[in-house]
Length: 398
Image (cartoon, rainbow, N blue to C red; front, side):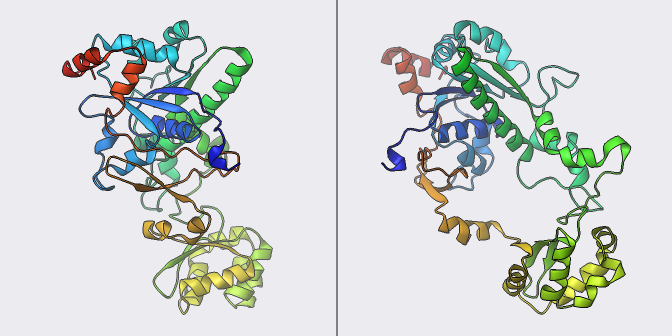
């Protein structure tokens, strides 16, 4: 039997999501990858504001395409009086509710766990917010870059002269991943107990968890790791080095055995092994400028491919510092068939497959939805007739 004929882990699970931007959509897209039916509630006329972040994917936003395949879009004005009945019917049928609305908004809509669990005791609720539902920061707005700052990430990232944010939405991604973990745990626990549960996901707490190493490095008031650009803050040489063709190679040494191999087989300077300036990682790290000049001199007459051949032959870990064009063309991704295709309102689009490989089932790769594409179908399933659906649309409810 092929993987395509096998059931997926979340087949038959319905997820209701009141989501926008990245954290919640990233979570629910992965639930959809695993087979869940994800009903995405969007504002009539404009939808998830991430739809308008850019127009780089044939007129669609890159963030939206990335996080919203395989979902169904239902437009609903949550403030309209008739929306409450629709939400009630959806909640009664849902296995999971995920939301990352503004602080307090879900509760005002009657979508707190206390309220929805009375109507559906088996529902798993995942609330994602910047700071959690209590504490002095609970009402603060939170965006990815703000949480990178608040969570200390910027203090250890960047050059010695200036902090730098991550080039993608790592705080949102962290929250989305912990939300995914929580939902899966909730569904397993429900199978054991018969009851759902609530999970309170704080972006700050997710970011703080990811900061565990620098946090402990600064234990009891010790100096935190210094900002070291793309180099490792405390191990050297471990970072980017230019090559003779104007490109960059990333390499990393972990121990003295590797240092000896690097000197003899890569730099072809065996005398450096015993050089007292470089005789331990601490000394190499302290003498970064001197060692960097030696490495750059050795690499100046070689192109990146030749440097990487030497590094591989010596068993030294290395990587190319790739562009997005390089990543699209990456031979390893293509050799492993990591690119698939999905539909969208603008036609077929390439997509990366989920990075969790298995022969047990094939990931779901359904289209990115147009705004409100599934409104009529979903409402019909909830028992609304065509005339009522038309009236709801004419009144701007959907």
